[in-house]
Amino acid sequence: MAAHVTPLPGPRSDDAFTSFVQDLFAGLPRADQRRWARVYLEGLLSAPGKKSIRHLAAASGQPAAALSLQQFVNASPWDWQPVRAALLNWAERRGAAEAWTIALTTVPKRGEHSAGVHRRFVPALGRTINCQAGMGAFLSGPDLHVPVDWRLLLPGRWSEDEELRARTRIPEHHRDRPLTAQVLDLVDSLAQASGGAPLPVVADMSHERDAGRLLRALGGRRHDFVVAVPPALPLAPLQPGVPSPDGRPFPGEALGAGPLLDRFGSAVFALHRAGDGRGRGVHVLTCLVRLPGLPAARAVHRLFAPYDTASRRVTRVWVTNLAHERMPRLLSLAARHDLSATMDSLAEDFGLGDFEGRSYPGWHHHATLASAACAFSRLTGAGERRAPAASAA
Image 1 (cartoon, helix red, strand yellow):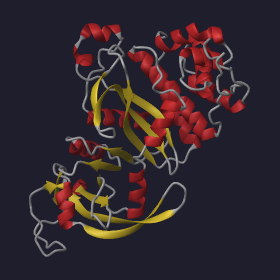
Image 2 (image 1 turned 120 degrees about the vertical axis):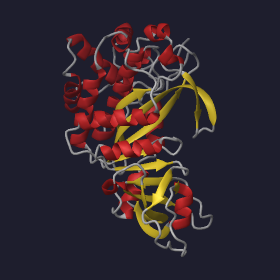
Image 3 (image 1 turned 135 degrees about the horizontal axis):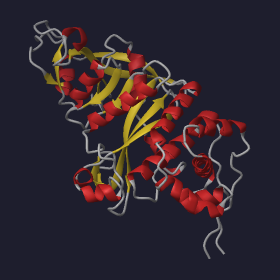
Image 4 (image 1 turned 180 degrees about the vertical axis):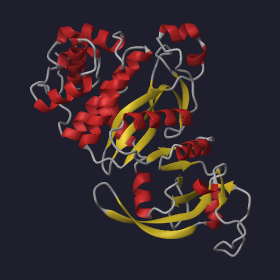
């Protein structure tokens, strides 16, 4: 006999949850859409284990609602972008964010028919997997990250095969784009929807050859940024002809970021305060550089990299246009790039990877609702409501 999923007391009578739902879904045009959005969100916050449609329906106390929830997330034509804008504004009012962090996540998939599925090399895993890849935007503070927007990558056949695109309902103007373009699109959306001043953009582009294009574009939009770049990214010393710390003159031509830092970087010691409030000393190599292709007034950047004193090895090389900011703050911003724990929680606690449909709108609907569940849990302290372990007869 199959294991029985015990319905849980969800947050239906909670005033904070009711207000949250009203804030997020007020723009949905139909009452039934608003109703099923609430039920789906309750299920994400309550269902134990895999967030299948059946489990979401059971956890919300409405086992017979599975078909309606499936229709709501996969086929109902509601626009997810206004809901994400409302989520962003809600989160901004409740969290002390210090950065907009952009990060890529992959969701392993077995089949080939879900929108965007492809073979992709994942540096963190060191291997190629079959997956969907999403680029997410997060409000990041000292000890938490809140997802507020997403883009689904559409490489190869998902941009070229019109029959496949029609089958998964991919809009005409959504095609394959470089990761730098996806980052810019997310930043532009945040800037348009945000109710506050723009925050520094933090991103790990250390595996992207065109990271320099992203830096120039962010600077052109007047965004502050702290971005990890490939060691081969061409940069120029700030003052060609002026002796470097080792007595050799700066070359006039550009060098790779890594070699430039090795040759001309000055060693500094900075106190980095982690999210738990504890401080630790960090050794950093840093120097001022020029980013080629920019007017002189906007070309000055800081190159820096934390390193191990014993091996003198660095893990990531960073470029920022906050050239004269104090190093402790730069280290704090750079630390916001690590979203591994948040991505794991999104997958395990809020079901980001549990979407069972194949359509492009369905993926975005589910990602929006999973993000909302995560935001509500993190910013209200509601936590995840888990059921007792299921028992089998």
